[in-house]
Length: 190
Image (cartoon, rainbow, N blue to C red; front, side, top):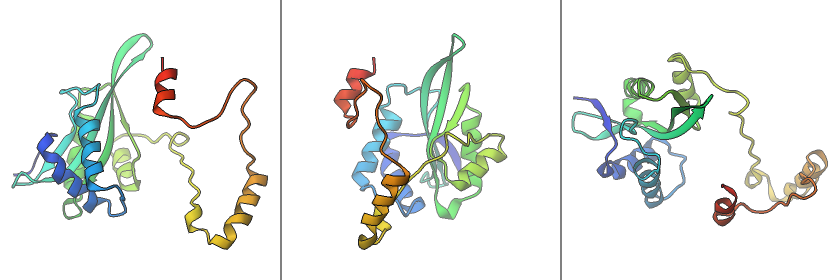
């Protein structure tokens, strides 16, 4: 019998395989994805057993769907609230439809005060909106310029045009610009 249950550590190898199957364009190595799942969903400092990541299993207890949940504590108008961010929403191509709908409904019925989705594709965005969610258009914009697809002989002229149309950002006086490193982040976060 198919059902939804919380993520367990022993699900991770099956979820890595599921991700490879659901997102064929993904280029992360399996061991890196396994580490990612472990850290983000099972070792997260805000992990909350009442807001677990969700696994949709078939009759053989094999994961055929997954919706990762990352709880985030926050405050609103001086009151503590719980935010649940959904991510890595995936369903085996042979089980699409019912599994995704049940995972999303289970997530939205959780104990969080606010539900957010991280990096939704078009299909999950449509499902989210059909279940009453809304898309924040401006924060959802992402800009990418892929020079690897531009022929080598054209890259120089493209860069020149971009420099004219999109000049480099100049930092205000007293503000420096450089790479964001983990050390710099830990120094600046407090």
